[in-house]
Length: 144
Image (cartoon, rainbow, N blue to C red; front, side, top):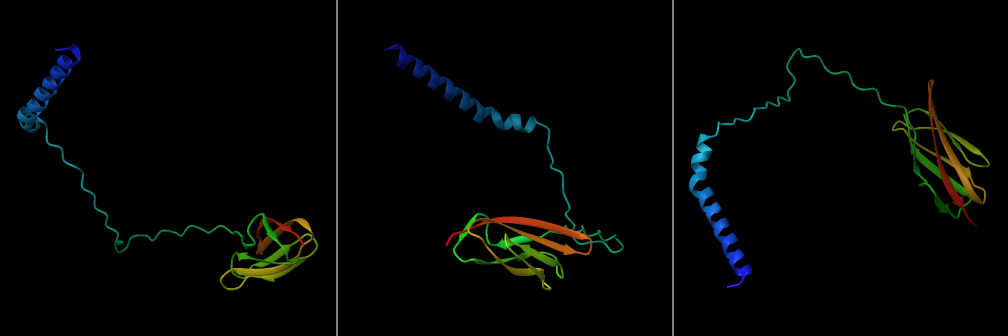
């Protein structure tokens, strides 16, 4: 018998003895270990009467540009810019050659048109409400 076969036989015998020992002695060892109890959680989601109601977090004044997407290529000279902001805000849509001043509706949606020049155009939307304002810029490429 060669060395490799003898070594494999001894390793197999050793593994078998270890597994047999775990099966025979293991349950007795588990009984000797201390009992472990998991903590109990109570997720009482109903608010108790008289409990203070949390103060809502203030929303941040912001403007978003939903159309056109950044770095888009358009073939029309007139571009419709739309998005959302706070309801009733005054929105200024600035293109490279002109600007459009519109108001957002009751849902905060706005839409304004600007004229593009050939090539790269930076379109900036600024929203004003009381003393707050926010601006976003999108780049649009116009090709004829």
